[in-house]
Amino acid sequence: MSNIPEKLVAFQCYKDGKVLIGVVDVEFSGGENMSEELTGAGIAGAIESPTIGHVKPISAKIKFRTRTRQSVELMAPVAHVLELRASIQSRTVGGALATSPEKVVIQAIPKGGVGGKFETGKSQDNDRDFSVTYYKAVVNGQEVLEIDPINSKYVVDGVDYLAGVRSDIGMEG
Image (cartoon, rainbow, N blue to C red):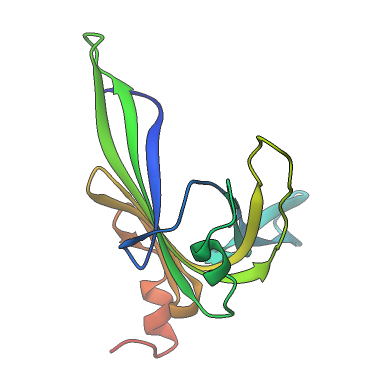
């Protein structure tokens, strides 16, 4: 039996892999497979048929504790490359605690969000909303997920499920 994953110990968020953008919380949503209901001859009822490698829009909400220069720079209407580097805690079979790295890289375009509040002694909760156009997750040094709708890539655990589609429509070779 392998380690039992428990929680995220800590993480940092960097712009372009090197500039720490502040103390933040990050939440992703969306990314569900696009699908269509399939009915007709030979099917008793209906089934939901996902389209290989096609996903609904992915969004990211980044909540800054306070407004920073970096949080304002992320409002520029350009694609920003953000990298989340995390340490994940797990428990070994013998009960010892261990950590391992996780990294998520996204390319994101701001959708807006000037938000925030002014309250003495409290965080400002300055939110930014982004449209994610590229998403890659690396767990313990292994690429486990890559979603790149613009370049027709959908890779899960090393298998590129859109490679055949790209070949079929003349995008490769």
